[in-house]
Length: 172
Image 1 (cartoon, rainbow, N blue to C red):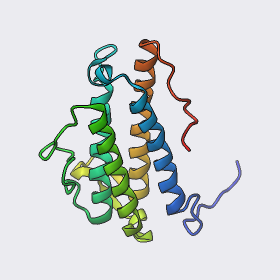
Image 2 (cartoon, helix red, strand yellow):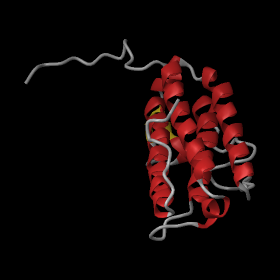
Image 3 (cartoon, rainbow, N blue to C red):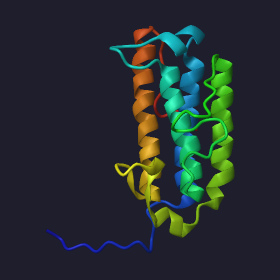
C-alpha cells in the first residue's frame, strides 16, 4: 500500500465551486417542483413517505437555517423557515412553494460570501444537534446529500404518476 500524505493547503473544491454545486442541485430540485401537478405535489405519497411538498419544506428549512448557522451560528435565524417550525408559514400552492424556494436560493447567494475560509474548517454542531457534528464544509455537503436523497423520492413519485421527471444531470 502506498504511503500518502493529506494536506489541507490545497482544497479539492473552492467555496465558489461548492456554492455552484449546491445551487446546481437546487436548480434541478426547482425543476422537479415545477414538474409536479399542483394537487399531487401536496398529496401524492408512495409507501407512506411524505408528499414531495413536505420533503421540499425540509430542504427549505435545512438550507435557510443552515446558511444562517454556518455563517453566524444561529441555526434558527431564518425569518420564515426555521428547523423547528416555529416561524413556518408553509406554502399552500405550487406558486408559493416556488417563491419560497427562490427566496431561500437568494439568501444562500447573499450569505455565502460571509463564510470565511476558517469557518469552512471549523467544527460545528448543525442545528445544535450532537449527531450533526463536523467541519462546516462537511455539514454543507450533508445538506446537498439530503436534498439529493429527497429529490430521488420525488423521482419515484413522478414515475408512479406516469410523469417523466427532469434528467438527474439537468443542474445547469
